[in-house]
Length: 580
Ligand SMILES: O=P(O)(O)OC[C@H]1O[C@H](OP(=O)(O)OP(=O)(O)O)[C@H](O)[C@@H]1O
Ligand SMILES: NC(=O)CC[C@H](N)C(=O)O
Ligand SMILES: [Mg+2]
Image 1 (cartoon, rainbow, N blue to C red):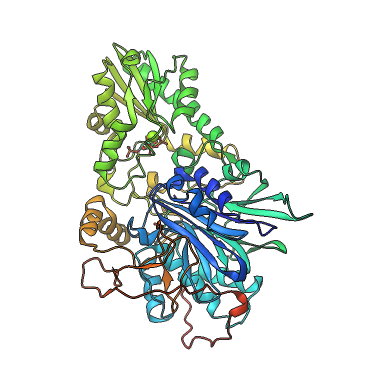
Image 2: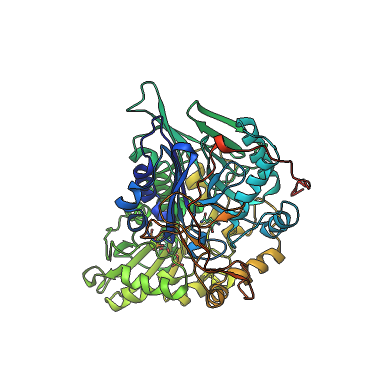
């Protein structure tokens, strides 16, 4: 669930500080890596990206060197490839026209796309990131125009081609050197995205525009008129204004319900549904279920305690409905981020302990009802139930605002392995025993769906695949699930980390982007302004054996501007892919 952001100012003022501020507001969507690329005079790109949190990487000094009035930002939570610095976004490809690209989501036909890009488009893909594939598909589609200069129609057509060839979930923000920014959302609208505008403070009658994963960014940066991008729609923003087009017919609109359960900030409104309201409704619905279950078991609860942060809104509502006191029994260390999106089970487990501390005052001799938004691997619940018992709780009942998660996620949540899911292959009683609770209470799926759907009757369904195993895009076969399980399960990732040697191919600082041939550059943050060339396996195959390029000297090469583009030939092999 990465965060994506793009801003175009009416003026030529530097936009980087606002992009960094906006990314801070999207930090909850990805903590592994982040980056900003801006476009300045002569269509030159300036970038700063790498592993780390927004406030650390995008410091004032780095930001001051990111020149230009339009730019793209990204906060990454890896769901494909690795956590390597080389996969930090935005990605850049110099040909054609100079494109910068940020992606939220996950593609499900990457093998197919990789094959096409290699065999037909002859594009070199330097990482295992699905986003790099998506960017190169877009670049390939634009290349086919064969034009010296492109216009909005060309971009819409290229996006259409991408949508026709790509399967999975994606909300994307992109920028073309010297031209403008554009974005698009997959035909099922699985991942969220919208745009907004505000009056320019410096250009009379001008508008500043932004597009982002969540509306909270628009509120905080003073933008108005938040409008969700429709499924299958693309938007282009240039200094002439904004145009939108339905690039392919929308399919079943199925936004991911997990945004409401966990991912999004409560102060965001996604597709017309306030996340805060939907979480309140989850608390209400869960209360009815909890009342019945507690009565059936003859349990009287003394106190309701949320697991900070995400469950707070729902837990308060549940407590009020039950007429039981709500108490903040777990104190959260504000300096520890979200644990679920941390890479690796051991890191997650340790950080739950670092993050939460149980106050004996609220637990001693009490029957406590602990409320969380979801129980996925059970890491959090197992730890905090033990903490509650250590703090003297007499009885521990665990309640989850989401139903049991028994199926892998394929659209942008990194839980591809069934074996890692605590509810997979377990009954509710078995889950309860596994996490050490006296009783477990789950939300039902109809209640969860109603908690969100009641606020926007236009949404016919949500993507609930992690609860049902039904994948709205189709094409998610048992074979595919087994394949990603082999690639991305925690133990598989650990093995890969062991096998990968060397840093990213090119370490570009927050200076002008370097470019060579038509390869995608995977820049990384650096403290120096000089581009540095470092050795890196050019072959992404983690089993080893790739060639190593190193020692070369990358001189500063300017990014392409529209002015410097040359007429080029139509590629000889033009083979479109189709899911159909
Ligand atoms: O069963 P698990 O695998 O532990 O996953 C579920 C837990 O992880 C998340 O918390 P997280 O710490 O990521 O974020 P939060 O502070 O927003 O609640 C979520 O809110 C649950 O508490
Ligand atoms: N969480 C996301 O949206 C991730 C985007 C992309 N799949 C990546 O791994 O970088
Ligand atoms: Mg939590």
